[in-house]
Length: 77
Image 1 (tube, one colour):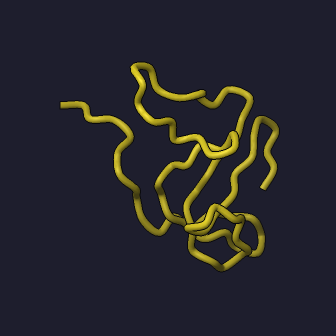
Image 2 (cartoon, one colour):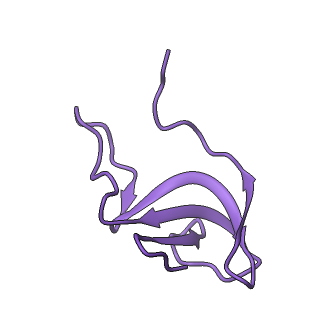
C-alpha cells in the first residue's frame, strides 16, 4: 500500500507479505523510520521494515482493519 512518504504491508509469521483478507502483522517502511534502539537492544527492523507487533487485515480497497494491539516496544515505568 503506497503513500507519499512510505509503505505499509501486512506480513505472516514467516515475514512474507499477505494478501487482502488475511490477518497478519503491520509493518511500515519510510525514509524516516528508526534504524534501531540505542544500548544494544534488538532492532525491530526486518529487511528495512519496522514490525509494529499490531495485527490487521488489508481490505480489497487497501484500507487496514486493526484486529489487535501488539506488545509495547518500550517500558515507561
